[in-house]
Length: 215
Ligand code: TZP
Ligand code: MG
Image (cartoon, rainbow, N blue to C red; front, top):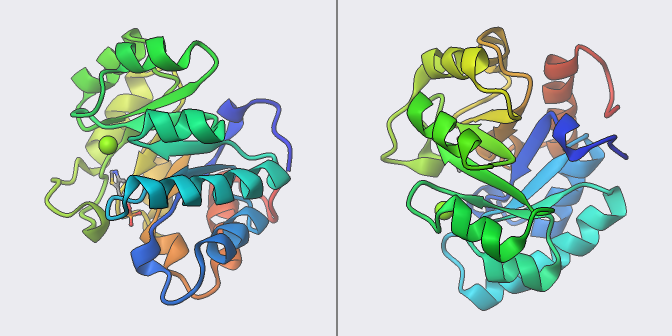
């Protein structure tokens, strides 16, 4: 699939090996790409830096074949090493301005936000996109309070840069998230933990675009 711009992404999938149930990272992630994922993030909180680096090289090769951007969670050095397209940072990670200074203007830098003040700060400071969530409670980010669709609605009203709803989003509730104003969603467990990963991605895309298929 080729995009006019990465900003056109609709379905962002983050790795979550705990949900893979024996399937390999590369197989699961290739299924997401076949199903129409148009942005991929490597997020591996429990692995050593070397293991993350190895996975990043693998995903770089895979995402290059599908012409889909690869974002690395947390680690700028890994992103630079494998020539990833960018990084995703939380509120307690390296500040956006420092990350921008290190990575340069072309890198995609995404910031997790949980409140409209954080969203507007990230936008003002030059984030390329923001994450909005967790919309619903989720075991993937246990302990983080759900922001609910109220925050999604707030962001839809005020934020101009690309933003993506995340956290506990499933095929069962994605309609509610879209109704709150989201045009992009991100998921881990509902996708990489599903039995038929490509089919699940296609269903998410259908919900988001109103169209069948990965286009
Ligand atoms: N950031 C906010 S919620 C979340 C992250 C990484 C976890 C999303 O995972 P899931 O399984 O789709 O709820
Ligand atoms: Mg982080």
